[in-house]
Image (cartoon, rainbow, N blue to C red; front, top):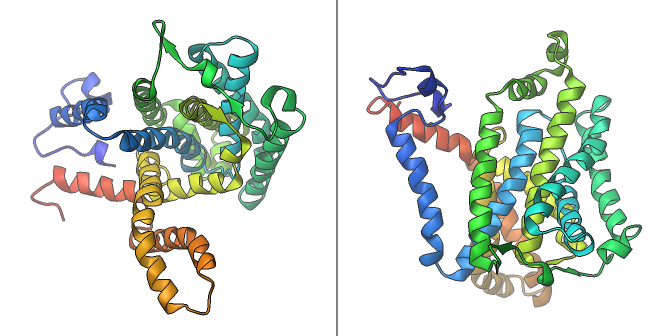
Length: 361
């Protein structure tokens, strides 16, 4: 939306400017400045905030993959956390059993996850909507069961798979948490740029046509099944990258890190951020993780005391246990009422208003 609108008096003078993502000098300064700010944050913020930003970047990559599948192609998935598990465990097996380094395990695990996504994308030829959601929900359980049972000799089953002995090494030096931050953030930026550019390619336009009307797309000569499979492949590849980064940042793996609840949270992040918008994944992951890890813990003591004094007929431990999901649910419901089209949509409106000022109405 906003990318196609420029301030009054700004025109394209050559083809390179016409196809550029950042068409104006201000856009380029803002984009490069934001990236530089991200690079200097470890020298400014405390370590717990850096850990939170790292986690946001990892989950934003996974949500971007879901955005390519759901937002661009219109194919829903309730098993995205399982694809993260595929990437994480395949990377863990590659480094522990086959002697891969982090730098070789990352692309190998991502590609392997993409091919697993192709397998579970096959039902999209015959089913859609609710039925496709059930098929991907089956993927969530099948993948986790496979990791815990048939693949137990490689994955340790339900027990943790430690990765402390396989820390990423850069020029002979093991990367610390801060060092890994400088791997995750640039990689997240590159993947976001790739996803943004995907919408401007032949494949991306085919994805959008399948999303809008798959029957009309097929009548126009688009091979709907091929593009649906490509969407599943790219979506799973993004999830695999996120899983690898999560595994090496946590330095341990266990299947309880990838439950169905995480798949639902990833879907909620996309809806909150804005389905179909390139920045929707970033906004959604930031909103959910900040609310869950910062805002809710701050509100918890006050709300807990209030409810204990009000609902005296309920055991205090029951109130405490139910309060965290209750608070998050209330905040999410309020958000969806106030901003049903997502944060990215509001961001686009703000950018357009700024560019066409003073006629921002």
